[in-house]
Picture 1: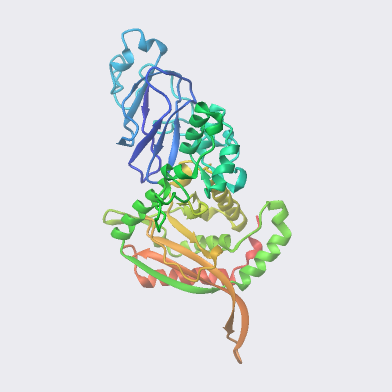
Picture 2: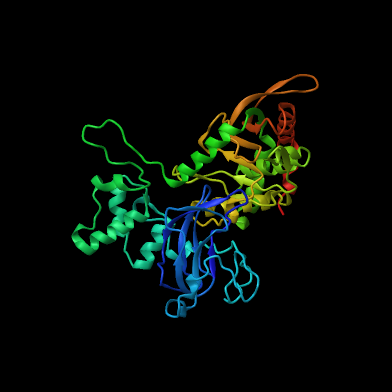
Length: 446
């Protein structure tokens, strides 16, 4: 059976194998983790979908290959002792069937229901324990899995790293700690002078007399930088913004939270209201929900809403709520909370990170005034939601105007000028503002 480089999203064309967890000749059971891959958007573990023996590794750690490439072969146990048939036909053809080609099973049993040629990916990280450690540290999914599988007690490691100013435990931290334990249990504690070797340190140690910290970019930040640098270079960006009076939203939010927060298990913020208004406005302005496809504009019929999530300042991910236009306020808030919680817990799947058609960037929790985000190409638009503050505003009346204190915030849209012009974007933003200020939000509690 061939093991293929999986498809991790419609815009992802290749992946890099970062680590092999099995070697040639190892027995493999269905569900065993074979290797870890990295793409521009996500790092995932790939599991075997059939039992047998790993007869051949065709793509080594560190190599990058196209989606659908055969990276390894799994054969029956006899393959290593009886003429090595698992190595005879790396292309995966089956002469007896007359049906050669990628994905042929070489006589193996059919894949279980739900598995296709690119669906080997699973992320069973939750079974390896909590991501939260002593001293406020987090532990990465890969580090958590290694610690659980090798029986490594990382409580002491967490305390020492927290004291050294670190915020996250990584794979190399755990492996180094385990090696020091083997050599000398007393030497297991990490020393601050060695933390510069970590791939994702919060702070690298300073050379004597140095006047700066050298902090390597972690994998998520490198991939994000590569993608956004291409977007910034390729996309002719324009930014527009409107001020929104959130008085109606604020009143509805308070009343809905009082009535439903206990049953929902969460409290509404402003973001779901904004997301719902965006979905409604897209019905009238569908070109903002599109992507560039060569010399054409692919206008999507479904709104797959990307939500930018900060990972405790260690990077950014954009999980997607698929079919967001079908959800009312309560359903959209529930779906967004699910994606945000799983992003911060390291439990997103490849499907959660692909297929976005429009994105929201939320800096408002930090009280920002105005943000012009970079378009998440091939999407053509992204909306920034900034801080909402009480401000004096002029309320127009039939006889006279008056000044009132209202919660006011700025919504800023960056867009690809190839897809539409400023008038179209301005009209869309005006519609979003109108919906936020005038909609009957109390009816959106389904």
